Length: 342
Image (cartoon, rainbow, N blue to C red; front, side, top):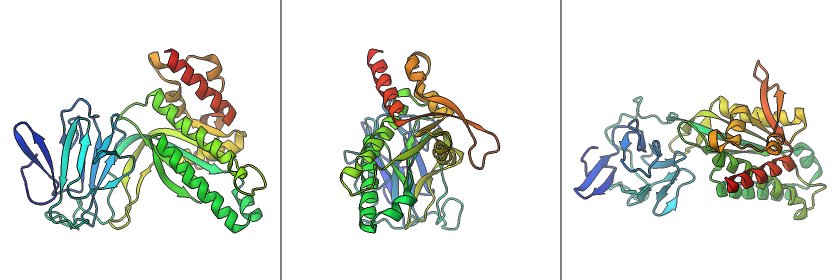
């Protein structure tokens, strides 16, 4: 930690006085309890890899929570999506509070001095910085092309707009945010710990999916549709690079890698096997739990059945665990009952 009162920095107040943490000379800083972070905070309520600060081309600083157990807060509000910081913001990690200071900013920070815009440390298109264990949910409206041909454009627009908005609200309720709106599909990402996922965290993904399905199936009651709207989904868990792939004026926070690509392919595979949702093998394993937390209910184990699927672009067949939404709801019900008993 460098003592520096000028330029963008963080202030950590301790019994010994103020400590100034410089935000100069780089474009990305990680914050956490682990020794592999740029800023190590010895707070037992902080995750090993808790959050990330990223500087944009404009000089703005973005705060991203990295799936921390106890959350990241800005001025008392929990961060669930990347947040642009303002001068004087209070950042809370566990029980540690820091103040973000950018003296020269007027609602928008200037470029930080000390970094060459042409150097590898500072690029107009920021590099992905953090490899994280994530779960990806891809959910797609079935027979959307037919809907576009049958519905009035105004009705179609209102229906899809409502679906996007309500799906986003549900995903936020279950601890994530919509990473992408893609035509008639949504991609959401849950960022987990560094090396494992609890059964409870994985169950939240399944619950979000179930809630979106129920909301979708009721759209025809609000809009003059020919039939209830149906969706299909793929869920995959694994490692991916998480960060910003956009430019300074158009930041685009996303996850990239085979884990994401396979989630889209799993969603498509549900049409082959005539099921509503397909979980990748790793996602299924975490959903069932491990050790003492393992879900040992025979009926639940029989609700997500293995299928060999051929994912587009993959040479070898893949094992997926698939179900209908009715079976998924029953699985969630049994999982909750098992958890309450345990």
